Amino acid sequence: MTKIPPDHFKINSFYHSDGKWLDILNVRVGHFLQTDITKFDGALFSICRTETESLDPQQRDLLEYTYRVFENAGIPLQEAAGTKTGVYVGSFAKEYDIIFSNDPSLQPYVSSLRNRIGHALKLIELVL
Image 1 (spheres, helix red, strand yellow):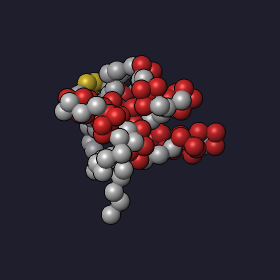
Image 2 (tube, helix red, strand yellow):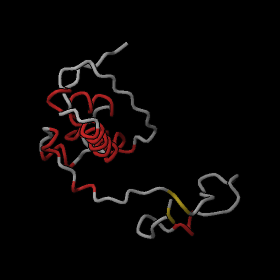
Image 3 (tube, rainbow, N blue to C red):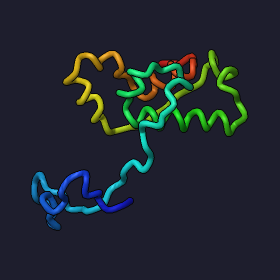
């Protein structure tokens, strides 16, 4: 948790300590990405350059973390491919879906977090 970076927006224009006001923030801190999202290696997951450039940061991070899970477990991705592996994801932020909805050229790249992992890692997903 850090102070809201000044390059995001002018917090003083939106801040009021009373949380009962509409369209006003009553906090001056938040959680922000600390990494450069342009450093994502889409090729590792067979994702083309155009798609990588428009990929939701949540999907980038989740793919990298999932890769690390298999790596830390000593399971090569080639061995995981084709297995009946459950993928469960909880998420609430959908900002990129809203951005994509305004640009039809980006529509093919919209997918759920769970589907992104299953497809990129070639897992057989069980849908109940």
